[in-house]
Image (cartoon, rainbow, N blue to C red; front, side, top):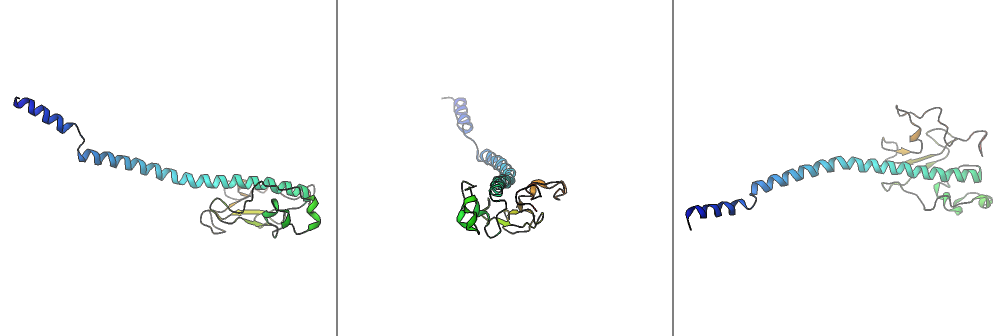
Length: 178
């Protein structure tokens, strides 16, 4: 063998694999890309949970509307949302025959973050003729900025509930109205 042949084989052997520096650069690039993906997807996950909570409130609102049509009233605060699937929770046994539930197919007592749902009737957010359904959100504290309520869809750009919104109000033409 000539020295030129040995040099070509040596060069091929050395160049046939990646150097440690090349591997480290590739790993660093992959980690950077992975970090960007994770940083951008984490907020999306929380937003998705919030959106799902709002959808769940819409389903519960439909159940409340059916309850109100059957019984001419919203559930009391003592009955809570449990009365939507459990007739035994009703305060007045004389209303049992008017209850046509269950109004929800599965019990719903917690929000998407595992916190207990808060129900108020008469409501505190929009007034006494409304009910309030509240998810305390990811922080688990009622009254904070991340709370989600059944009234959120009625808020304007400033975060105030629109005065002309009349979803779920009891009026003189509605069952159980004044």
